[in-house]
Image (cartoon, rainbow, N blue to C red):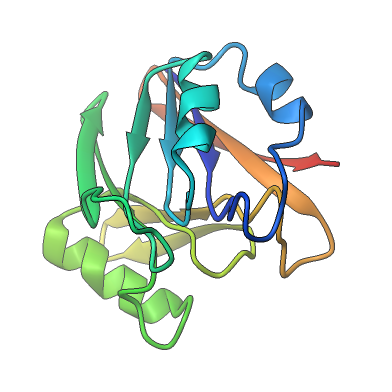
Length: 163
């Protein structure tokens, strides 16, 4: 399964539209996960033309999305949050404890606008922390999205710069 990961689009407040490249990069995905701060239904309407969407609410969203989502793919338990629940912002130790509490193998979040692919070892288990960054308002030199491939019990996360 290939999953497109996106977060913190902030349209139309901070950007006019999604970069066109996103649609090319996500053309082969089975699912798109938006980690919040969508801020406009038009973003989801555009992304729904590509694939099914799973979304969580960000601190800037007025739409009534769930604060947290969970799914299981090939026995990997995946948690999805915006990230504003984590204090201080982006604290990987707090994320680790949340994953332990929820028994998540993968945590996908946004909020920081900074991409992250980080593997954490907890006893005999590995936890993967992912943040796709932002394709419109980065706090990192590049605007980014991410693709997550889960196949044959293997996980591959790829950070993708967009213009």
